[in-house]
Length: 200
Ligand code: GDP
Image 1 (cartoon, rainbow, N blue to C red):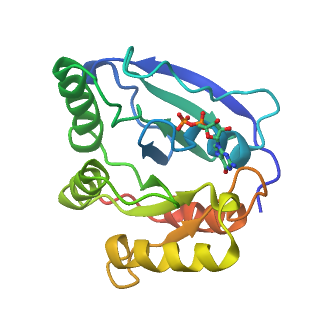
Image 2 (cartoon, rainbow, N blue to C red):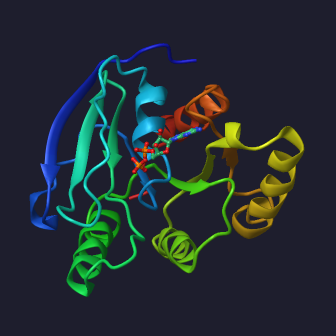
């Protein structure tokens, strides 16, 4: 397990034309706003200070690039799915994220974060479909596992497996930023993918 890697902020990008040239294997992280993305990133990296902070919903949409040691680039995609977000913001999200996924060397792995307690929204499924369409390897991370009892975790997990698991082909990891459940498993999945040769 990774204990602690240096986390270095590289750049924030608002337009696809500004993406940095890929020089490390990339792992992208995406999910609905408030799903627990910042908490997961801080836990995953063991960042001492809050390197990853939630953004004000629906305003500036950025893709943030962070270098983790010499091993990988963590790419923090903007959250989606806020109610009452203007159409122009949604369109910008789409342009930015599809630009990142499709007009560039694709990330080795995308982590799609979903809340373990909640029913999937259409938008979660649409983002998953986007990843499938772009042939981007992905894993689903079900967050906030500490908020459910063990038996409920099993129930919800089984349901998400049916929806996202692609018959065992897509890893599903239950995660908690409170208890650290799932951290080692998540690192194993990440390591497996960054060691693989790029597709394109
Ligand atoms: P983001 O908007 O996706 O970056 O979400 P944040 O990481 O800011 O988390 C949103 C809210 O959920 C915050 O109040 C967090 O404290 C809480 N949260 C995030 N992860 C967990 C978790 O694993 N367990 C619990 N109980 N709360 C969490």
